Length: 464
Ligand code: UDX
Ligand code: ADP
Image 1 (cartoon, helix red, strand yellow):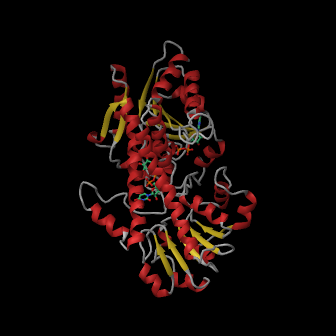
Image 2 (cartoon, rainbow, N blue to C red):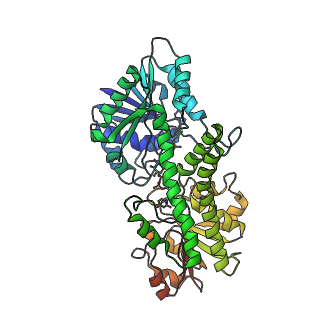
Image 3 (cartoon, rainbow, N blue to C red):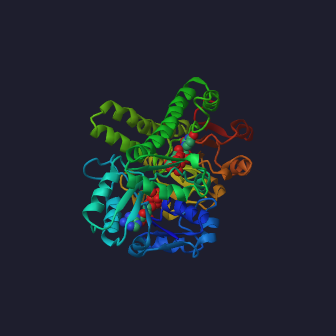
């Protein structure tokens, strides 16, 4: 039986290794984390992350060939292959602050492997990391371990997107495995190829060198984010000229060289990866003395910030240049639909701007708790504090509750339950102050129908 350990039971490690257990019943998968509460949740009926289809997979294999524990050392000792799926947030202080990835968690996990391993291991870098992290991991492992033990490092970046993770893992566009181009490296690579090809066609499992694999992950996220910033930049032109951003995206997307995906204008991209990975790329470019390259990628993030700011200005301008003491219903707080994750969500920035304008914001999100919302809004750097959040934020249990008596609705997340056929907009309208405004930051609403009801509608990328 192949024995796999996954260090880090988060959004990446949890789903990706649960799917391996689901697909390969003869592989024992142990997912470990230092966070006891998180592990307890993985072992309960209420998993710590919301992801469509994840419950079924975990409940089917948990206790059979899928285990969750805080006993990191034992899982390392028993494993043949170890996935390192710990967090790699942007550094908050010190060199590269605000740009470089904080590799402290990776280093700590790597040192632990070196300290406790009693047999050879294939160590797989799964978290997104700056280029050449594998080299650092190898140096740590080799310097700290017994000479009879061999460590081979692979890079196997994760391309799953939250909300569609299970499908992305079951039917991926590709799986990337990078290794050192040595006979031992190829042998280690083959072990992982043999796992994935149990359910993924061989031609989709791409092998390459370690550094290409590490860079490809950053590059893929940077290219995706760049498309969103490009369409968002065009949305500003649309609003100023009367063009319709959905029509422009459709016209461009039908060119097979461009393709239709990731051209949905929005209030701004969020999530734990896009901004972090681009900033990583910017930092790398600066380190390599490539300032033009750094500036090029940086502009993708700058455009995203601009989009959030621009949308807030539009709200304030439309509401007669003041939102002070006005009740604004903010629908959606997660960074996209079908996830409870709020990391880098545009809603956080929007809320913070609205609070600074002294609006009263009534928030509803089907999957984000009040505690999470308050924690996000009081994080350092967000520009608010506990007292103002308590005073200006109300977290509601339904969209109707949030909208009741509001001067305006702001759609931040494209949850299906906010769409026209699911939410009764006549009922919403009747409960609001008049004139009743809706700001659609996700282009999910039918503006003409809303206008028939009596709403004043403002949509990203549209001037009418
Ligand atoms: C992303 C990558 O898609 C995934 O491959 C990688 O492994 C991790 O980062 P994720 O952040 O989970 O995944 O979600 P994604 O669907 O890419 O959306 C990111 C953000 O962009 C969201 O805020 C989303 O709403 C926004 N977005 C996406 C748009 O604004 N417009 C689009 O057309 C697509
Ligand atoms: P991601 O989205 O990349 O999965 P998360 O923050 O959701 O990031 O998950 C990373 C997990 O890794 C966290 O639950 C954290 O507790 C865990 N972790 C970090 N360092 C270690 C470590 N040295 N050993 C075990 N778990 C770790």
